[in-house]
Length: 382
Image 1 (spheres, rainbow, N blue to C red):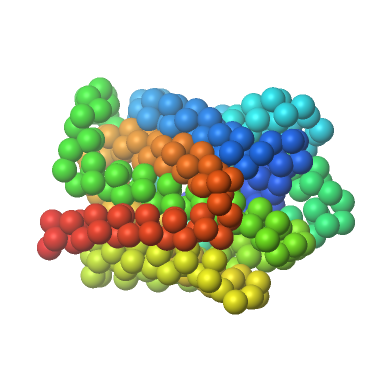
Image 2 (image 1 turned 180 degrees about the horizontal axis):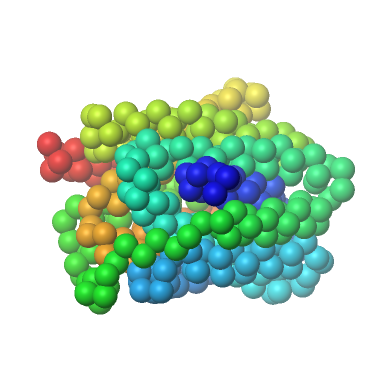
């Protein structure tokens, strides 16, 4: 093999998130262009996340039995087809259905790939924190490049071109998977039929609750920051892409170094640090005196998303037995979706009743809750 398995993981993740970076900042604008109101946009994301949550756990358990790579490839194909559908001019209902397919298939592909990556890291003798941080840097590098490319495409060729290129990039990520072999770490006697309640007790359950709340808060940014920049500041597509590029650029070093640091000082301490920065990040979206400063404050994404994502995945992989990893990662993705289900409609309704600026202040107050719960994680692991 010309490339090591770790490098192939990085390449696959880069191409997959290149597609997301090109297109995701413009999903709310695409829905708005289809005639949806803010609350309807929130509801569309809610339905999409509900579908993703429904399938994530069961597909995760299936990957424990049939192999993770098969699931990664098949769901990535569906995501590529979804991007292609969104690149065409569709009726509002068809647009929403395509969004549901994209978020469901993309979410399951991403979750199964996380479990598969951990399997590869263990086989190669690489630590979870530093190793998954490296794989995640590949994803964020792709996202960063995608946000910049997407902005240029939308300004010059329109929305359709961005989603068309996203489809091609997601499809290309499958090629990297062809060179990766299946990692069947579970023997015939593996406990793949363990009941779900085994994964919903103690520290595993507490982590899932924290992730639900974090994703509920993160939904306010991912779903509505583009609309806030566009409607409140009149920002051009390239400026909107720039805001997401700042997030991705700051996430890259955080994913590697915070993941590596968590190998030394403990996952709980780093999780608490990351969560403590959510309230100021959200408040500054509204309180920043200028558009330029607002965009620069998104560097805090390095902790609130980049660091949190890598460290929480490393932590999750260590909380449950190896033979239940796919199922637990499925639940992890379901918590992402549940947070999106609640947050999408909640923040859309708040924005519709007040303003986008007021909505982010409400989200800042709410983000104190997961930080408080993280204190329990630190105490129990001490």
